[in-house]
Length: 116
Image 1 (tube, helix red, strand yellow):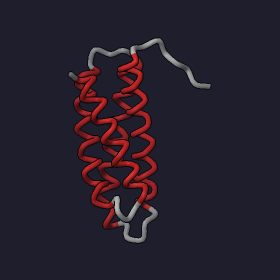
Image 2: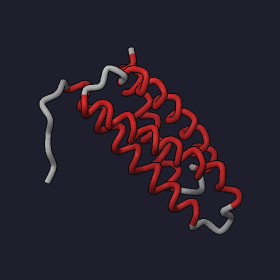
Image 3: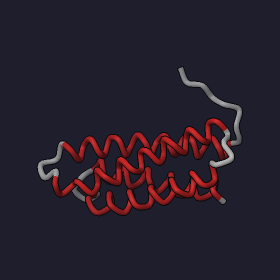
C-alpha cells in the first residue's frame, strides 16, 4: 500500500528522486559485488552505499517536514554528485552503473533546488 502525503509538488518530487536514487544505488552496489573484478568496483560500492544512506536520511527528513531538510538536501546532492562521477567511470561496461549515475544526477538536481 502506497501512502501519498499532502505536500508540495516540489517536496514530493524530491522525496521521489531520493527514493529512486536510493534504489538505484543499492542495486548498483549489489551488482558491483557480483562483478568478476570486485576489487576494481570497490570505490563504486563505497560511494553507492554513502549515497543510498544520504538519500534515505534526506527522504525521511522530507517526509516528516523537518526544518533541517535544506541542509540534508545539500549533503544529499553532494553524495549524489560523487556517486554519479564514480559510476560514470564504469557506465560504458556496466548498465547498473549507468542507471545509477542517471538516478544520482536527477536526485542531485532536485535536492539542490530544495536546498535553495
